[in-house]
Length: 423
Image (cartoon, rainbow, N blue to C red; front, side, top):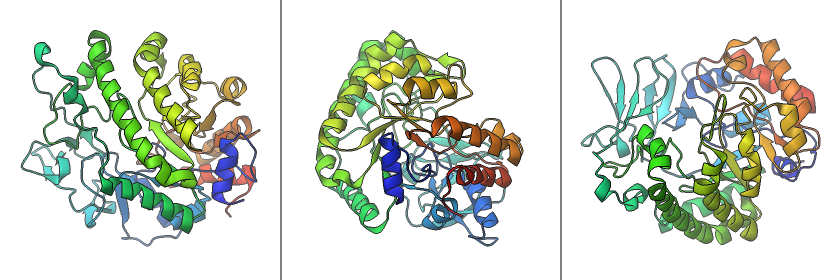
């Protein structure tokens, strides 16, 4: 089977010739640039001093290129926005180094400024004439958003301020996605995973809007969470307008892309903590579900795409609502969280949800275990999730910096041992 056929079979809850594998198709299934560099060196794909590209500078994720896909048996390729979370494009590459000395390439507008304590500041669109929107702590590995919250005047709060970043796509953006989908379909046999801006409601990584030079509205993380209760009508109006715009963009993209895309990343909002959901089921139903359902319904009525929800934590009490809202794929399948037992998930939802991830715990096992422990955990998850299809192999969230390269390779060795694939 080709990679595209293999993933399509899994999406249709059918067993393929082997379990399909993802790495790097989305911003939540990727690999940190420093770990990627070590993996490429270990596989003989690079020599010391070679530089990987940082294609997602907020989390400092590295580019998963075709040679790595071939070496590890990866079946997916991502199709994302040409602009990063800091508002500049991935182009005009230049040399840079991480704090740990890893040599990388970063976009030309990746402009940082050191603080006296060694922290690095990042600027929206690379424009140092405006306040910084990101901070990498000294010795750190990725950026945190800098909250740029203007004083809130309750009498003047306008939902339009929290939707200024959402707009109908310009012709260039439409062409970017259409041409990218065509290229992946024509030139590769990978399954294409598209991430269209504007479909995620209340994603806390996006609320501070690190790409905007002067964000208005509610941009403080804590204030936003409080607002889902204390200003629920306001938040609902924000989502309502955002949904209108997202539907308009889907209506323009759908006919141009057609079946050249297999999966669309629809939501990256985290609804869970380690101990369960951080909002009530009723709040999800009142505030989020109507808009999730509207977008998913459009996709299912007009395309062959499968819809992907990323949410960390113990979201078991919300799974029935996710299904009713029309999501096809659950990621990252955080099996260490409360209620997320793999056998229960497969038994109760294995025919209605595709599980994408869950292979290895990136909080403990992958960074701190032995290669044998990593392999054993990955094999145990494969034994549960793989039968009958409906499973795409990936770790629980991105592969983090300082992860031993031996452990990363052990994870991929487990999937090869379980179901064949790349040698």
